[in-house]
Image 1: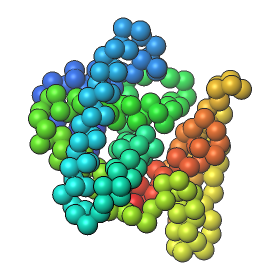
Image 2 (image 1 turned 180 degrees about the vertical axis):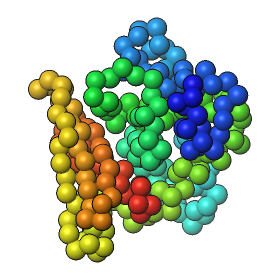
Image 3 (image 1 turned 90 degrees about the horizontal axis):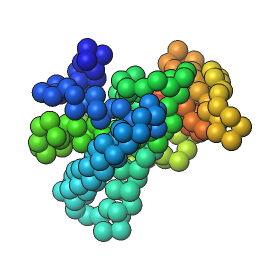
Image 4 (image 1 turned 120 degrees about the vertical axis):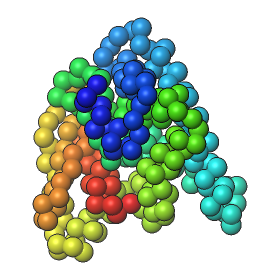
Length: 222
């Protein structure tokens, strides 16, 4: 459990029942234990609904001039798998997942599911107000970043790198594994200032995109 304590510090929340956190971070698609499938899916189900409600209520309260359509579009982006994975990569959630996965390559979808599970675990261990405060602390930097194009983070990072160092980011494939039908890539991105991040994906392009998203988060550009 001591390994999870550093995660609790990042969240500024310490579980009363740490087994809830451990259960939430044990994913069937990673550890391949059939009995865990139902439990994992139930955590994800609850976390997904909690996240949706928290973000919807925050948008309703803080964007009074936006139409229903505008709110729906913003909400869909903020609760998407890509955004959840981005937020969870920001707290390095993959380092705390209970897993036995070779090379520590974890697909974006699994990171997203684990983020939802973690939200559910916090709620079950505390209450709605507590989990709402934690979620908003993680999401507000993204909510307040209307100029970021989630579909093209590599371009955002390139603009930043050229403005700061007059050089483009450097991408490097660290690892390629899996089969030809289910490949996995692990890619690093480095700026001339020394800042770097790592991303994973089922294609080189996706891994580069995730690396760029992670570095944008680390640089607090979001």
